Length: 232
Ligand SMILES: CC(C)NC(=O)[C@H](Cc1c[nH]c2ccccc12)NC(=O)[C@H](CCCC/N=C(/NCCC(=O)O)S[C@H]1O[C@H](COP(=O)(O)OP(=O)(O)OC[C@H]2O[C@@H](n3cnc4c(N)ncnc43)[C@H](O)[C@@H]2O)[C@@H](O)[C@H]1O)NC(=O)OCc1ccccc1
Image (cartoon, rainbow, N blue to C red; front, side):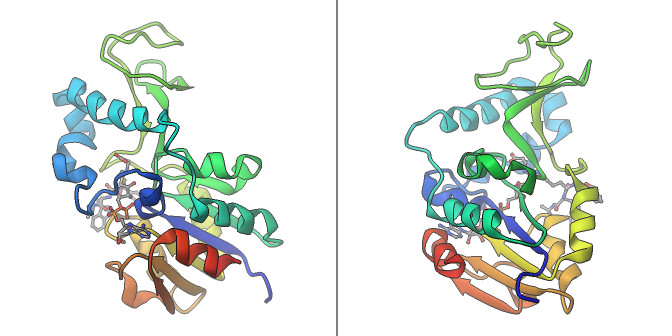
């Protein structure tokens, strides 16, 4: 089958060369924080200002003109745009670099862990685009209440977004590319095992990931080199 149904999974590694820290690498996001201290509903209940601080800092990075989609993001945008069969780019990243690289293909992009540029009100469930810092006294643009706004991001212990669509795509997937992810966080880390023997599975990563042995093929190196080389 020339162009089989395609799923691309990306992680923090694809945005590393755009200047955004990964989670586990040297100086990674978790370096300064214990994950359960910042990316869990319990942490938010315990110390919302600390959690807002963590996400405000990352949201501010996206406003830095130096932070732009890189050749790996653009190569995937070309691939998805030209793919004649079903194609879905599932990203674990909450940055908006894929969005910026493929503004005309957003129907083929699924940010399964949410977005830094969206907020959600836990009082009225309104979801809104958001650029600036967030604080506990920020009123909800919908219901006006304060103290209820949180980043529209999936924290540990919470159900990822779009799982129905992802499971449907996994059913028919015959080519799976995994890019810039350590393969340590589930359910994303379980996709390759679910496709083993059904789809051709390819890892493009700086180094072997935790699930590297499960892939049919692997090309290791910086995403801005290995992704365009694989795509073009
Ligand atoms: C730590 C782990 C063991 N824990 C989990 O997986 C948990 C619990 C769990 C569930 N199932 C399990 C099964 C077994 C064990 C545990 C679990 N999972 C959950 O809680 C999930 C929710 C998890 C989501 C949490 N939120 C994130 N992000 C948003 C927040 C935020 O961003 O602050 S996760 C966050 O961490 C993960 C980080 O991983 P990576 O992106 O891969 O980044 P990392 O730094 O680790 O690695 C970077 C890689 O890039 C490479 N690299 C670096 N530079 C480059 C470069 N230049 N070029 C190429 N590659 C490069 C490096 O070599 C490296 O390999 C990403 O997913 C990221 O989104 N929810 C859930 O399970 O709900 C119920 C459910 C039930 C049924 C069906 C569905 C759900």
